[in-house]
Image (tube, rainbow, N blue to C red; front, side, top):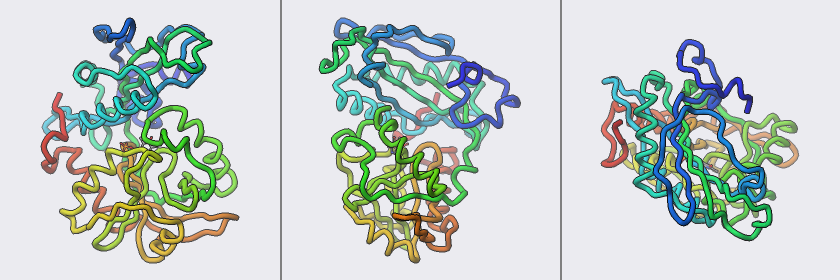
Length: 346
Ligand SMILES: *Cc1c(COP(=O)(O)O)cnc(C)c1O
């Protein structure tokens, strides 16, 4: 990323139009793993770090991350949404990659310390402070192709974000990929950079060939997820989404939506389903992508094989998608009470 863009800036008026993730808040937290343990963490000005050119991550992609948000509520307090759940997932990703697992309490302390330090930089709603813990292998040894890193760095970055509603309300155009996989099937549950690298080629190709916003990966004809979001089919009284397995990322947004959906009169069906079933569903049903960035984004069009196009319902974001999204956003914004433990006030 461009160093100019990544310089921390605090004046909201200069950054209000900045693209998602292109601005860093002024402070980051840092901890290092060495000799079998984590160092005490410290807060630093967000900026360049120094690692060896032989660092494990640069050669063997030992890295994982998290993404979630802190919101400024109407009472001015800053509240992190589902922090504990994201910390659990970060540790699972580290474990799947045989990397040193962050200590849950220390990571929580790092996150809340950063949020506290940059609280003046948290945009007004519907903006938020996007939080990005990242773990990577720093062990300097280019011969360690088959050895996990014994040294690692853990950073907690924060990024003020504004473009929140725009991304959720425009119906998406999705290419249905029926052969290629998004990533290695045992690593779908890890939030790791390599999986994004693996999805990049197919995603760019679909963008160029079919003007698709995203690719829905359906290897073997089974619907999985897109490059960075889970996939839900929605209709009157019902949600259908793939049951959890190792092939895809277990989204916290997905989990949150499935938790609140019954209160909105939507029954949950979690199971494997096929591309054919999906095309049948969208004749008069809805489809949506869930993830921290856009919460729940409606799908308007599916593009198949050689470019044949299928409208999802009316082609607009459907009423059930909007209602479900609004219900979760109201919780994130502190307008409606959440289940216990979902918010951490800083
Ligand atoms: C981060 C991510 C998601 C969404 O997860 P949330 O916890 O809902 O933000 C879905 N799929 C992939 C591949 C992801 O990396």
